[in-house]
Length: 458
Image 1 (tube, helix red, strand yellow):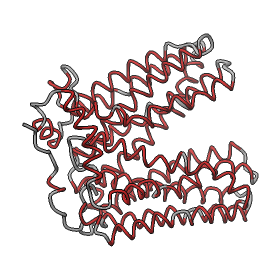
Image 2 (cartoon, one colour; image 1 turned 90 degrees about the horizontal axis):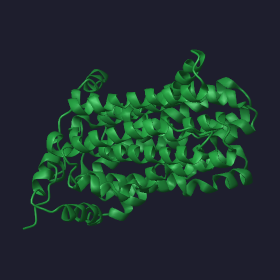
Image 3 (spheres, rainbow, N blue to C red; image 1 turned 120 degrees about the horizontal axis):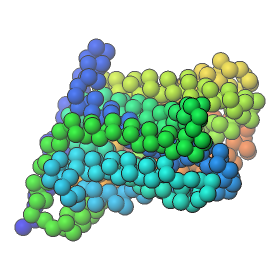
């Protein structure tokens, strides 16, 4: 007998529109235990990304690895774009002992973090000067373990937070993710430099620097141990208890597609997923070349992006959480979509102003602040689309992979456009490319798409 579908109560009937809340109420929700758990898991998710990317590139450069080999390190990020291929395994399979002791989601979470610690330690033992390809292979293992952790954290976050805490959870997750990335880039380089200043050889300094990074994954491990298994996950586990492992995997993989595509206006929603962040991606692809081209130095750009830009991102993330909590899902998407598009005009203004650090700081602030608002609201929307705990991990991984199409492929021609029209007009075009997503947003809103979702995850 086929087990019944395990769905959340929110998918059974539309929820009422959220009521406006005060700043005090909005801030209080960030202190809820479930939100704090999601925030700390965000730190654990953001930490490994640079260890197999930009930080590793610095290590290899200092080790004397040729630039061609270093350039190929971009391929190490492949697991982050292909993680939807093994997401059904995370939804369907049990990890021996871990699942029995900790539950379906927490078991996978602890298992992936254990793998992450081990793979980072393997990378720490590598010597890029003698064997760059072994270091690259170890980094690929880190990226695979890290992307697996992302799959579980996304599913855990979607299933564990109630409606009233989803917006705060989104904002906290994004902010902590950024902090984790900062720790594994600037923080890791600072630690390695400290070890070198203490008298360690460069190879040993890098090894111990990565050992420290592996130890910081324990922040997420302790958080997972302290957390509780989401009730939706328990219900899904009970619904599929009698099925074999192969049946569960097939159900998670096929069900993720069939359940979503059976919804009203599914293809329009998927097109909206592709296009919503396109305005951000199209301009973001050329921001650094633009800043250097008009006369700023790399030091100027890096200092403002790491300082002012990071602060604007963190503040924008929490502002996005407030917007999503105060307004309906459709209204929040309108606010985020319009703001992130209009922010591109600050770069058109900067192109006319020229080399002025205050103008650059303002443009970077506007870009990062509005982008963070849009990201928090957009991620909340993706979460709202994942309504069935039998395949939350699979659907969310698929949606994020689809969202990457705009960032990775549609934006690839931005350089040719900028070369043809010049910088001021290019950033105006970046505003205009947001129009298709806003047209889709209008159409979906009139079709009742967001009424069906309700404020499920916002």
